[in-house]
Amino acid sequence: MKSTLSIRIDKELNQLLEKAAKRTGRPKSELVRDALRRQLSIESFQQIRNRILPFAESQGLLTDEDIWREIS
Image (cartoon, rainbow, N blue to C red; front, side, top):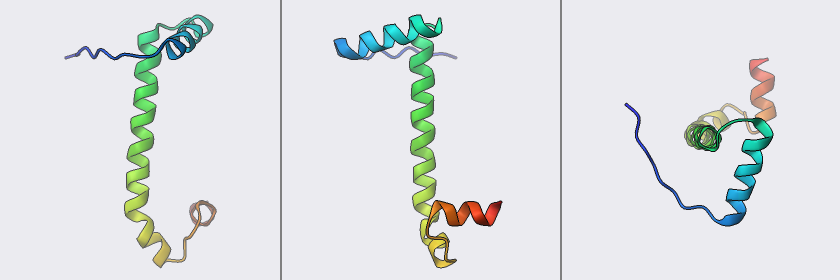
């Protein structure tokens, strides 16, 4: 089931969205859905990262590079 969400955006943001839609050939609604999905994924990742950070630090994993080195 789909639902509808109405939002207000300022003129500048609307112009950027219209330009992006023309440039990509995609509808504005699709661009907004993708941007929202991406933002929510980033926020979810950051929450998970913040929860596991103390455990990683206790193992000597202090930077993202430390973690990549361990999993590579």
